[in-house]
Length: 208
Image (cartoon, rainbow, N blue to C red; front, side):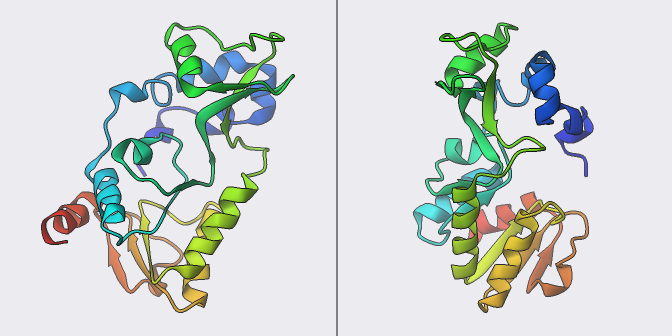
Protein backbone atom coordinates (compact mmCIF):
# COMPACT_ATOMS: atom_id res chain seq x y z
CA UNK A 1 0.00 0.00 0.00
CA UNK A 2 3.01 2.31 0.42
CA UNK A 3 4.79 1.19 -2.74
CA UNK A 4 6.54 3.31 -5.34
CA UNK A 5 3.36 3.94 -7.32
CA UNK A 6 2.31 6.36 -4.61
CA UNK A 7 4.98 8.71 -5.94
CA UNK A 8 3.69 9.21 -9.48
CA UNK A 9 0.72 8.58 -11.78
CA UNK A 10 1.25 5.01 -12.98
CA UNK A 11 -1.88 5.22 -15.13
CA UNK A 12 -0.20 7.97 -17.12
CA UNK A 13 3.43 6.92 -17.13
CA UNK A 14 2.59 3.38 -18.32
CA UNK A 15 -0.19 4.23 -20.79
CA UNK A 16 0.86 3.11 -24.27
CA UNK A 17 -1.26 5.73 -26.04
CA UNK A 18 0.24 8.52 -23.95
CA UNK A 19 3.74 7.09 -24.43
CA UNK A 20 3.35 7.14 -28.21
CA UNK A 21 2.28 10.78 -28.07
CA UNK A 22 4.66 12.02 -25.36
CA UNK A 23 7.59 9.62 -24.77
CA UNK A 24 9.37 12.49 -23.05
CA UNK A 25 7.03 12.01 -20.08
CA UNK A 26 7.90 8.37 -19.38
CA UNK A 27 11.69 8.48 -19.39
CA UNK A 28 12.34 11.30 -16.87
CA UNK A 29 9.77 9.81 -14.47
CA UNK A 30 11.18 6.29 -14.85
CA UNK A 31 14.78 7.44 -14.49
CA UNK A 32 14.99 7.00 -10.71
CA UNK A 33 13.24 3.66 -10.37
CA UNK A 34 14.08 1.74 -13.54
CA UNK A 35 17.17 3.27 -15.12
CA UNK A 36 19.35 3.45 -12.01
CA UNK A 37 19.46 -0.28 -11.26
CA UNK A 38 23.22 -0.15 -10.74
CA UNK A 39 22.46 1.83 -7.56
CA UNK A 40 19.95 -0.70 -6.21
CA UNK A 41 20.66 -3.90 -4.37
CA UNK A 42 18.41 -6.95 -3.97
CA UNK A 43 16.56 -7.21 -0.67
CA UNK A 44 16.63 -10.11 1.76
CA UNK A 45 13.57 -11.48 -0.04
CA UNK A 46 15.30 -11.44 -3.43
CA UNK A 47 18.43 -13.05 -2.01
CA UNK A 48 16.55 -15.79 -0.18
CA UNK A 49 14.46 -16.64 -3.24
CA UNK A 50 17.70 -17.10 -5.17
CA UNK A 51 19.28 -19.19 -2.40
CA UNK A 52 16.23 -21.43 -2.13
CA UNK A 53 16.27 -21.92 -5.90
CA UNK A 54 19.93 -22.93 -5.72
CA UNK A 55 18.99 -25.50 -3.08
CA UNK A 56 16.21 -26.87 -5.31
CA UNK A 57 13.38 -25.70 -3.05
CA UNK A 58 12.13 -22.93 -5.34
CA UNK A 59 11.42 -24.02 -8.90
CA UNK A 60 10.47 -20.65 -10.40
CA UNK A 61 9.91 -17.00 -9.56
CA UNK A 62 6.82 -15.53 -11.21
CA UNK A 63 7.00 -11.77 -10.94
CA UNK A 64 4.99 -8.71 -11.89
CA UNK A 65 8.02 -6.56 -11.00
CA UNK A 66 10.03 -4.80 -13.70
CA UNK A 67 13.17 -4.00 -11.71
CA UNK A 68 15.41 -7.00 -12.63
CA UNK A 69 16.36 -7.42 -8.96
CA UNK A 70 15.52 -11.15 -8.85
CA UNK A 71 18.06 -11.73 -11.60
CA UNK A 72 20.57 -9.47 -9.86
CA UNK A 73 20.15 -11.58 -6.71
CA UNK A 74 20.96 -14.73 -8.65
CA UNK A 75 17.56 -16.25 -9.49
CA UNK A 76 17.83 -18.13 -12.75
CA UNK A 77 14.26 -19.14 -13.55
CA UNK A 78 12.42 -15.80 -13.49
CA UNK A 79 9.13 -15.44 -15.36
CA UNK A 80 8.35 -11.75 -15.95
CA UNK A 81 4.63 -11.61 -16.69
CA UNK A 82 4.58 -7.82 -17.10
CA UNK A 83 7.55 -7.79 -19.43
CA UNK A 84 11.05 -6.52 -18.78
CA UNK A 85 13.20 -3.44 -19.42
CA UNK A 86 16.08 -5.80 -20.23
CA UNK A 87 15.38 -5.04 -23.87
CA UNK A 88 13.91 -2.01 -25.66
CA UNK A 89 12.65 -1.79 -29.22
CA UNK A 90 11.87 0.86 -31.80
CA UNK A 91 8.15 1.28 -32.33
CA UNK A 92 8.76 2.22 -35.98
CA UNK A 93 11.32 -0.23 -37.39
CA UNK A 94 11.51 -2.84 -34.62
CA UNK A 95 15.22 -2.50 -33.91
CA UNK A 96 16.15 -3.98 -30.51
CA UNK A 97 18.39 -2.29 -27.94
CA UNK A 98 19.78 -3.54 -24.60
CA UNK A 99 18.85 -2.03 -21.26
CA UNK A 100 22.34 -0.64 -20.74
CA UNK A 101 22.13 1.43 -23.93
CA UNK A 102 18.82 3.01 -22.94
CA UNK A 103 19.84 3.50 -19.31
CA UNK A 104 22.98 5.40 -20.29
CA UNK A 105 20.94 7.86 -22.35
CA UNK A 106 18.23 8.28 -19.74
CA UNK A 107 20.79 8.98 -17.02
CA UNK A 108 22.12 11.74 -19.29
CA UNK A 109 18.58 13.17 -19.45
CA UNK A 110 18.22 12.15 -23.07
CA UNK A 111 15.22 10.41 -24.67
CA UNK A 112 16.28 7.18 -26.43
CA UNK A 113 15.68 7.33 -30.18
CA UNK A 114 16.36 4.64 -32.75
CA UNK A 115 19.81 5.05 -34.29
CA UNK A 116 18.50 3.56 -37.57
CA UNK A 117 15.31 5.52 -38.20
CA UNK A 118 14.97 8.06 -35.38
CA UNK A 119 11.82 6.36 -34.13
CA UNK A 120 10.54 6.19 -30.55
CA UNK A 121 12.24 3.48 -28.48
CA UNK A 122 10.08 1.73 -25.86
CA UNK A 123 11.06 -0.69 -23.07
CA UNK A 124 9.65 -4.18 -23.40
CA UNK A 125 7.55 -3.59 -20.30
CA UNK A 126 3.84 -4.22 -20.77
CA UNK A 127 2.09 -0.86 -20.71
CA UNK A 128 -1.63 -0.35 -20.14
CA UNK A 129 -3.30 -1.02 -23.47
CA UNK A 130 -0.83 -3.75 -24.48
CA UNK A 131 -1.09 -7.52 -24.31
CA UNK A 132 1.00 -9.34 -21.72
CA UNK A 133 3.81 -11.52 -23.13
CA UNK A 134 1.97 -14.71 -24.04
CA UNK A 135 4.92 -17.04 -23.52
CA UNK A 136 5.54 -15.72 -19.99
CA UNK A 137 1.88 -16.05 -18.99
CA UNK A 138 1.70 -19.59 -20.38
CA UNK A 139 4.86 -20.58 -18.49
CA UNK A 140 3.57 -19.00 -15.28
CA UNK A 141 0.35 -21.01 -15.52
CA UNK A 142 2.36 -24.19 -16.11
CA UNK A 143 4.55 -23.57 -13.06
CA UNK A 144 1.61 -22.59 -10.85
CA UNK A 145 -0.28 -25.71 -11.91
CA UNK A 146 2.70 -27.92 -11.01
CA UNK A 147 3.47 -26.27 -7.66
CA UNK A 148 3.13 -28.14 -4.39
CA UNK A 149 3.26 -24.74 -2.68
CA UNK A 150 2.79 -21.31 -4.22
CA UNK A 151 4.22 -18.54 -2.02
CA UNK A 152 2.59 -15.19 -2.81
CA UNK A 153 4.78 -12.28 -1.78
CA UNK A 154 3.60 -8.69 -1.46
CA UNK A 155 0.69 -8.98 -3.88
CA UNK A 156 -2.85 -7.77 -3.28
CA UNK A 157 -4.01 -10.37 -5.84
CA UNK A 158 -6.28 -7.98 -7.68
CA UNK A 159 -4.37 -7.41 -10.95
CA UNK A 160 -5.21 -9.98 -13.60
CA UNK A 161 -4.09 -12.34 -14.94
CA UNK A 162 -1.46 -12.79 -12.22
CA UNK A 163 -4.16 -12.74 -9.55
CA UNK A 164 -5.57 -15.96 -11.01
CA UNK A 165 -2.31 -17.95 -10.95
CA UNK A 166 -2.91 -19.24 -7.38
CA UNK A 167 -6.18 -20.76 -8.54
CA UNK A 168 -4.24 -23.09 -10.84
CA UNK A 169 -2.23 -24.27 -7.84
CA UNK A 170 -5.35 -24.89 -5.79
CA UNK A 171 -7.11 -26.76 -8.60
CA UNK A 172 -4.20 -29.20 -8.85
CA UNK A 173 -4.13 -29.85 -5.09
CA UNK A 174 -1.30 -27.45 -4.24
CA UNK A 175 -1.28 -25.10 -1.27
CA UNK A 176 -0.87 -21.36 -0.83
CA UNK A 177 1.22 -19.22 1.48
CA UNK A 178 0.30 -15.53 1.35
CA UNK A 179 2.58 -12.83 2.75
CA UNK A 180 1.11 -9.35 2.33
CA UNK A 181 0.36 -6.54 4.76
CA UNK A 182 -3.11 -5.98 3.27
CA UNK A 183 -6.01 -8.33 2.71
CA UNK A 184 -6.28 -10.38 -0.47
CA UNK A 185 -9.29 -12.13 -2.05
CA UNK A 186 -7.62 -15.52 -1.50
CA UNK A 187 -6.73 -15.19 2.19
CA UNK A 188 -9.31 -17.81 3.15
CA UNK A 189 -7.66 -20.31 0.77
CA UNK A 190 -4.17 -19.92 2.25
CA UNK A 191 -2.71 -22.69 4.39
CA UNK A 192 -0.48 -20.05 5.98
CA UNK A 193 -1.08 -16.30 6.07
CA UNK A 194 1.55 -13.78 7.18
CA UNK A 195 1.86 -9.99 6.99
CA UNK A 196 5.53 -8.99 7.03
CA UNK A 197 7.96 -10.12 4.32
CA UNK A 198 11.15 -9.27 6.19
CA UNK A 199 10.12 -11.17 9.33
CA UNK A 200 9.23 -14.30 7.37
CA UNK A 201 12.37 -14.28 5.23
CA UNK A 202 14.64 -13.60 8.17
CA UNK A 203 13.20 -16.75 9.75
CA UNK A 204 13.70 -18.68 6.49
CA UNK A 205 17.29 -17.48 6.30
CA UNK A 206 17.94 -18.74 9.81
CA UNK A 207 16.12 -22.07 9.67
CA UNK A 208 16.15 -23.36 6.10
